[in-house]
Length: 205
Image 1 (cartoon, helix red, strand yellow):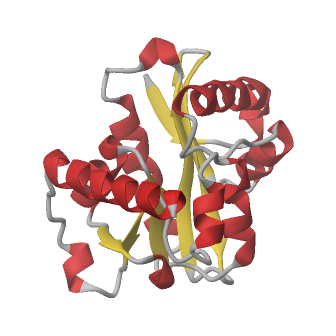
Image 2: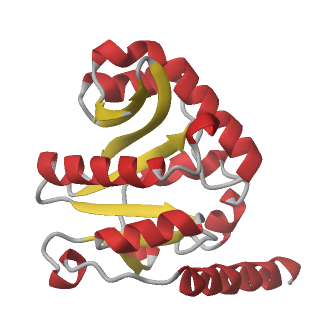
């Protein structure tokens, strides 16, 4: 298995990457923004993505997005092909793209919004800390990307202040962020449960 920075030589994988993301989004129903091949290709050409390959077979992918004139960076679209799930590949890809982000954008704050418990725990191990949405990018283009999520109405109702996703942030200037603190899956499960209960109550009113 090889995990490398994607470039124009990997353009042929754009279609299968989008198809894999689409199927995962249908299964989960939330948490993954659907993308078109042209968008994935643009990331490859700029060197803002990593790809995992098993010889010539696609195994996984993740790309980098920049917001607020480079002040914020997000590692998005983390996906592993079904044939390679359950092998720890997502963790390897996440670490690789995180390190690439820090190298390419050393002064940027790296953030993530996700409903996935495994991603939350992995982010925590890398040094991310849970934050409110107000501490993330104000770039409206980023939040518009949430429109493909079935919970987008929650984001709208709260004026983009909160959702079922949890916001997490790595700040290179924050000593707390740069010293990773492991948070248990149980803690994130409780956080997710509280959010779901809160929004269900508000929806019934």
